Image 1 (spheres, one colour):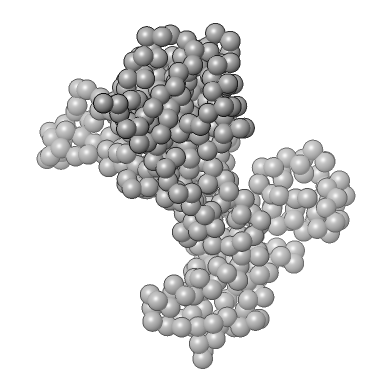
Image 2 (cartoon, rainbow, N blue to C red; image 1 turned 45 degrees about the horizontal axis):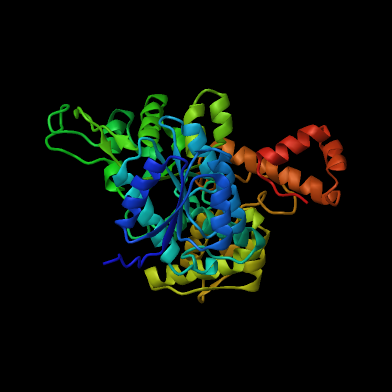
Length: 456
């Protein structure tokens, strides 16, 4: 009796008949109908004339390479998950394939168990009903910046590539990470967030990789680490720049080898975890200063996802404020609405602490307001952080300082504000703005890029 091929069709591209036969047999065991191609031209012909739900290609082909096929699929069949087979240890090519849109990769000699896991994830992605990007839980706002972010999240969720989420403190990097997980084939598996800066350095290896009973003083029983806890799902490394160099080496190996070694264990344990990471720091600068390993930077930053600051999405402030007040009312039993004056004040405020600061401001105002109406005075916004160009001075108090993670954050926000005011003053003319500030055109361009400003 012939198999039922209920899950669709796969295309295998490899110039070695024996390899194709082995891969075909493995995929047929997963109820897939299989078509084979021995070179790039044959694969292109099949893709142009037939439909597939999964593609697996070797990197080296007689008339080209697998990267060309990945690019062709991204251009002509963007919904088709494609995995690549790479030579053992050749992570650079694997990373390049992921950057170009490959779903995942498997190294030679092919581990059939890993291949089956990749195929199952790819099939789940193919069979899932596409979620509306407008319905990503928690991502509020319909500004151009948020529409762009939702679009990017929708795309990166379809791959297994590591994603580095950049953005200011309080802008919602963990929410973006959760959204990627929610839309991915791993959605039914764990999402494990970890603040890398909150783990004592002497406990890091045990926390990440686990330990065996008796491996050190206090190890009274076996313990699974964060990688094991996230098995099959997503591990989100928040504030990854805070990892000490000694731990960065071990993390790099775990990512490259897809395996971890618990403290006190002699053998490595295979893991299936997608890595997402984030930090509010300039990771490139950390690499240049020698505080972050360059090889780890390239491994976690296969795809970069910038999360916009609240100052770049002011059109979303009314919707965000309404949602925050609704949540606070549900939690506290108190209710309050914003007066038009309070809403105008929020729209003018620079929000150095982003959405997190808005939540703190509204929670305090809801408690202090009279007659369930929040006025501009109830918000207690600090002068010097408005969009009118004034700069904070003596008015800084401890509450404002508490909104910031570091002095660098504060100084960057002041620098950004000065640049925005100067450029607006000259209607977007950077040369004139630079002249006003005593900068060269090259210097102002560098600062705009460094601060992640979008200036027309």
